[in-house]
Image (cartoon, rainbow, N blue to C red; front, side):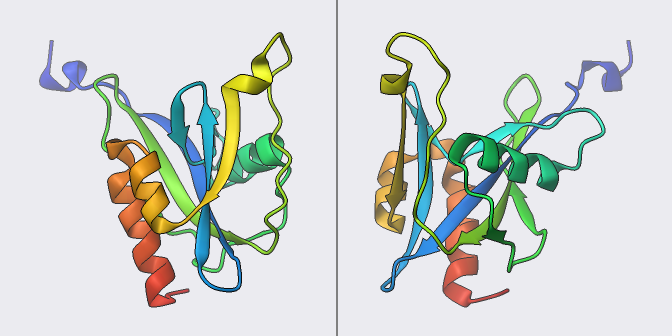
Length: 147
């Protein structure tokens, strides 16, 4: 067995850090699935472009469809988990804060899902530590106005 055989294959998920300017500051869209807060994301299907996968996931889960990718296709990835899974996040702006969160059907399913538009400080408190690099990256891009 070569050393390459022991390296886990990268399992890619793609998501978007959605920012909305509320007139005073940017707020970020955070979603909760059961007890875990994150940015909206979905697994990338074989042969699918990660950015297209992320945009599809946003539209399917929140009905946000008119996102502006003013920062281009730049992305930041999380550190890999032991199984090789990585999430790649892009940054986009939504002109609207109106979200329709789609949840799986079933008894009490709505209670397991939630969304919030959060400030940078709230995001730091709410999101898990594994997203710290992604959050810092997104906030730096928003603060610099780099588009």
